[in-house]
Length: 133
Image (tube, rainbow, N blue to C red; front, side, top):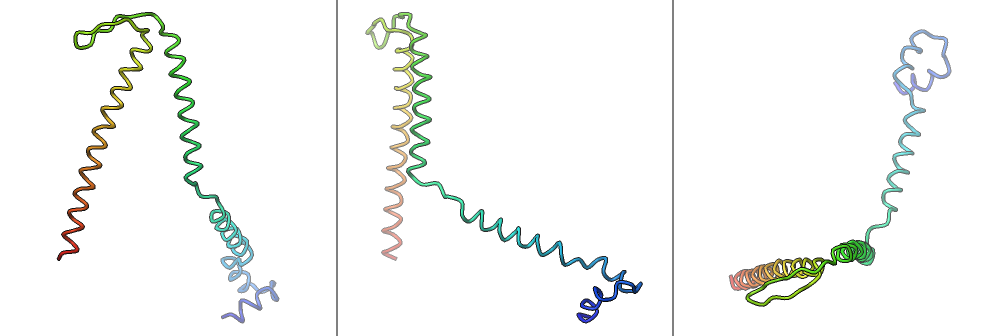
């Protein structure tokens, strides 16, 4: 059968050879395989994200958020009276809302830290139990 494949190109005038050559097209498959290989090389040569690049992205996002926060505070500079546990004072509205959001963020962080300590303690106890058995 491989001899027929080799002789098909030599004898294009034969009717049987023309029918066999239609499904067999070696030329297009070879460049496709080469492009797939080169595409594989391109994907493997991509730079992987590093910790420093992640830190730079975080810094840029933080700066953008701080700029929006500063704009918010400057646009909401009217004074308001704030009452908290019997104490009262006058603050710009933007600053009062900033304090409220910082307080909420600290509360969420406190709960997160407590959960991390709880999971670490559980992992230590589970690790001791595995080594003893």
